[in-house]
Image 1 (cartoon, rainbow, N blue to C red):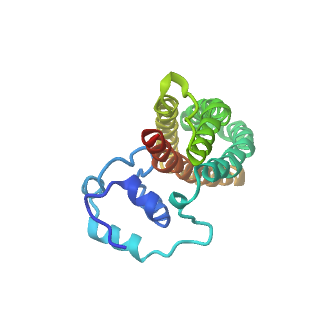
Image 2 (cartoon, rainbow, N blue to C red; image 1 turned 60 degrees about the vertical axis):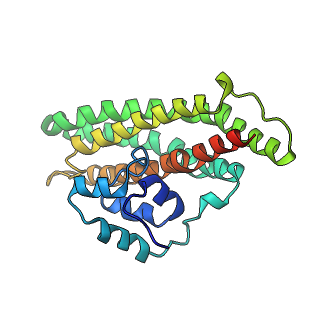
Image 3 (cartoon, helix red, strand yellow; image 1 turned 135 degrees about the vertical axis):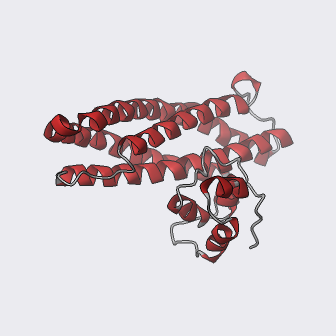
Length: 238
């Protein structure tokens, strides 16, 4: 495996599952910002492109990291629903409850950060809830039907607006909005730094918000950099 400095972040992450961990470690946006060359991003962050690529090449894939480029689109869509959508449906309400508990205990001293955090998180939760529904009811079934038709050598099903790129563009725009909310939550919390007098719930909340952030980065990456481009390519070949 030889990675090049002019390769795009999304392509590197799609072809090298371990790169996701490396990019996350360096806080490099590989999901919504996956269309940027790695050398451009490294230059902006003041880090060595050569050292970053060497770190990716030296990293061994973890047991739970798969090459989703080699899986069927149906399998990938099902994985996203079972792994990432299921996680969000369980975790988002729990995080909302924890935010309220922390506000009740600490808002007199930290209202300037906690109240905007609650507002930003509530917007993210609402958007993700409808986003997942649209994917599960419209886009993912369409992609599965496209793949089945291509395998059977029959005409692809009609897509909204005449092309799968139409619902994809909508989902990508919502991904951008979600990524913006994640950045804002990180800014509001100064990188999830817990105040010295923060209670245990405060600390656990910030830990779980960081886990949410990392999971959403992978979730968006699998769609933006793997599922969506492959679905568009399938449509072009028909």
